[in-house]
Image (tube, rainbow, N blue to C red; front, side, top):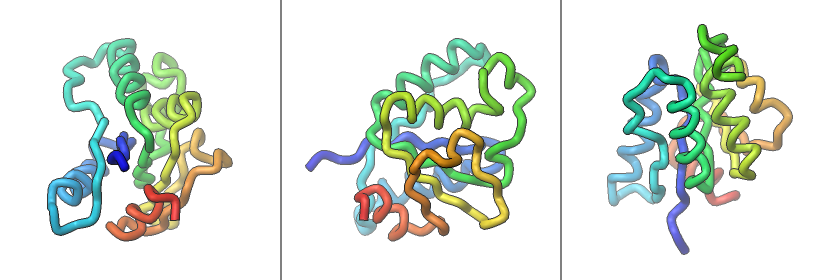
Amino acid sequence: MSKPQIFVSFDFEKDRNYKYTLNMWNANSSFEFTCNDKSPSEIQSWNIPTVKRVLSRKINEATHVIVIVGKEANKLHKDRELIGYRNWQNFEIAKAKELGKKLIAVQLNSLYEYPEELKNCGATRVYSFTHDEIVKAIRGW
């Protein structure tokens, strides 16, 4: 069986430590976590069409999109009109839905609001950021 191809949607300023934890789990052979991270690291631009193009390509390459639902996952972005959504996470979720990707929502705190695009879309919900719960969600258990 091939490894799941994972794209991680997260707030870079507030929640990147969770993204880095996922990468550490993947790199550590003692953990049973296998994925190929498709989140972009090469975006070196603030140009919104360029960012959209790279994000869309990376989401298209993924089999699953893990959405880290942090405190500001639904916050309005200053460039929301150009992005076409409330923020980048909502754009990424909408693109994943458009492309038929499996969505996994990892809620960091029960008080944090889900991104608009994640509401009522049938995403698998994970209510704690733990290795076992995320692996179960990826496997569909």
